[in-house]
Image 1 (cartoon, rainbow, N blue to C red):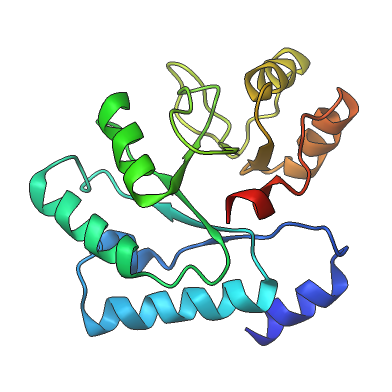
Image 2 (spheres, rainbow, N blue to C red; image 1 turned 90 degrees about the vertical axis):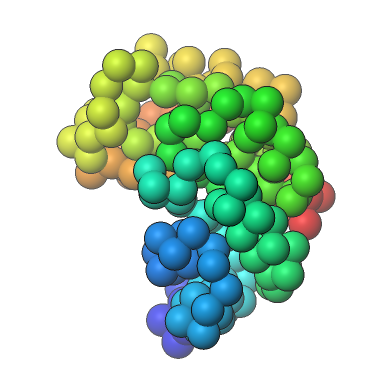
Amino acid sequence: PETAARWRKEAPPDFVFSVLCEPLVTQSHFRRTREVEAAWEKTLAVAGALEAGFIVFETPGTFYPQADHLRDLYAFVRAANRSGAVLAWQPSKGWEPDLLRRVCRDLRLVHAVDPLAQAPVAGAVHYFRLRGGGPGRKPSRGHLYTDAELRQVIELARGKPTYAYFQTADMWDDAQKLAAFGKPVFADAVREVI
C-alpha cells in the first residue's frame, strides 16, 4: 500500500489505475475462507491507496460455468466492498456469451476481454486487456501489435468509453501507437459506472 500511495501521488490526477485481484481469491473459486478474505483485504488496500478505477478478477480455466462456482461467485461479489472501484471480470474460455452477459449484469461487472480474441459482452464501459493474442493464437508477451490490429481495437471500441491495458513487453510503444491513431473515449467514464 505504501508503494501504491507513492504511485498515486506521482501519477497525473486523471490517471486511472487498475488492480489485478490477489490470485488466491480467484484460484479458490471465490469460496469465502479466512485466507480468501485476507487476500481480498490486501487487494482493497492497494486499490484504495491507488484510488483505482478498476479491480480485475482473472479466473482460471478450472473456474468453469457450473452451479457451485456461480453460487460462490455471486455470494462473494454481492458481499464485496468495491472500494469505489469498478469490478471487471476476465473469465477463462467456456463461458457462453448469454450466461456471461447475465452474470455481469446481475453482479454489476464489466467484461474484461482481449477484443481481438473475443467480443466484449457486458459492461457500461469496454475494458480491454490486450494480451498479444488473437483468433487462433495464444497470448504472447512478445507480440508487437501491427497498425491494422490497433486500428481494429479502435473500431471495436466505438460506441462506449474504453480502457485499454496492454500486457505485452512492448506495451508502452503499443499504447503510444494506439493513441496516435486517435484514441477512443479513454476519459473519466469510469466515474459514471461506479
